[in-house]
Length: 310
Image 1 (cartoon, rainbow, N blue to C red):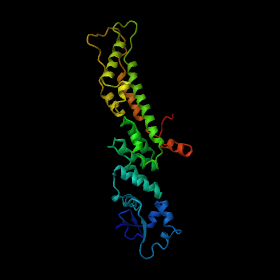
Image 2: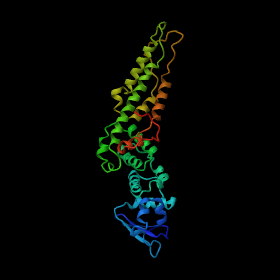
Image 3: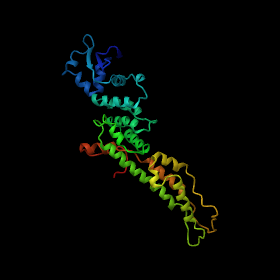
Image 4: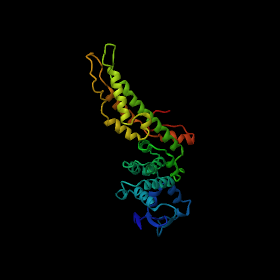
């Protein structure tokens, strides 16, 4: 049996494994609306607490792992609270916190868990995404959904098909918005690439070397060779496109071309324009949790994540 602390007046018997967690009802009631009601004076579980032996409360349908971590946290046994959890563990804790009404009490701990830096597969990211939604963590939800857009190039239908356990908590609209917003980011990337055509320098009537058209043609060939044209770019992820653009060399005019002595070709600002465009693209957030919730509840949205509304 695990003690939180040994003088606890309640023993939670949790899950199929009947894990016994000895807890202090005062801590639980302060952290959880659910336990504040259950262990209050109006229910049998709350009668005569602290008198005689600890009172047992059976919770066979709940996750013993999730509730143990929650109890460690609310009893301030922070040394026993893990810094990292796998995606399903995070989701289990989020659903338990939602059920027991202790989301606020877990706010600081869950901020650590909702940072899946090494995950790129949407099926791995779906549980942290759902956990962020359940826990109402706007920043984590935005960052995770942005990663789901940047690291996935195919349909989101498998995500919807494999996420039937999440539909109870996350509206299906999220899956459609992922596809919609990702498509817009592909368009934004093509705008950035296309701007390179207009940033190749200037040709005035006195120019005899066709400076602009020569550099524009070289740039177009480079984009085609790097498979970054509109039709080919959709074959790779947004992250891969950005990586290609970052390392892409400057276009080289064809052999035999010689620049004339016209005094002002203007020079190319293509590289600085590209870097600026990518910087601005990276600043754009993922999905806004505050825009999604009102669409299903009818409430007025106050967005915690700054973004351009469509």
